Length: 280
Image (tube, rainbow, N blue to C red):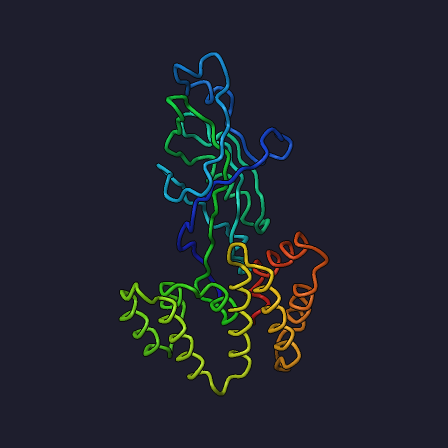
């Protein structure tokens, strides 16, 4: 993979974060610009700060970050999560990186600060909002490990399936309007893909691992689910093909043996941010 592009801005999710740590902020609007936005009820006091939970599509202008040339040069992709403070007029007044590849963080913070959102009022009172903007940097092509870990959508599969999989791509495209059973369509698509890869043990192994990484990355997987996935990954590791990256084996072994939930989250983030290199 020689070139990358940013295919889409995946989501905007707002969650409660701690405000008031300017030393951690990577960006902040100048005070003179902040003064330009005031409302009648905000003249004499600072509006209250609230979290609205998850709100998608509330941006008036969600600015796309530039894909840094340095990141392209080393085939970096993945997600960047930016904590933001949005003022009563809907402008992002402070932003800092929560997580993401260091080469992608500065552009993401810059884009976040340039974004605007619908002003929020409660009972007629303007409110400040804390939240997270998620920027998704997609590669031009994906390894099987990357595709399987992010291939829970028909759009992703049809876009990133390599050449030679036109029948599978056509099946997915023709079935995409079957909203009643998208999950079964995707499962059938992967079955067809694995059938074509019958002689490629490494590719099929990477797909199986990637799909388990995808399952672990979903919001709030329960303890029984994680236990079952860990057991499957242990089984996969015990029978991994010889030409699989040793670094990938090591990362997976660490992932399924965390000391606590925080360590698991950190290891999963680190793993998913390096799928391109690990899946080659």
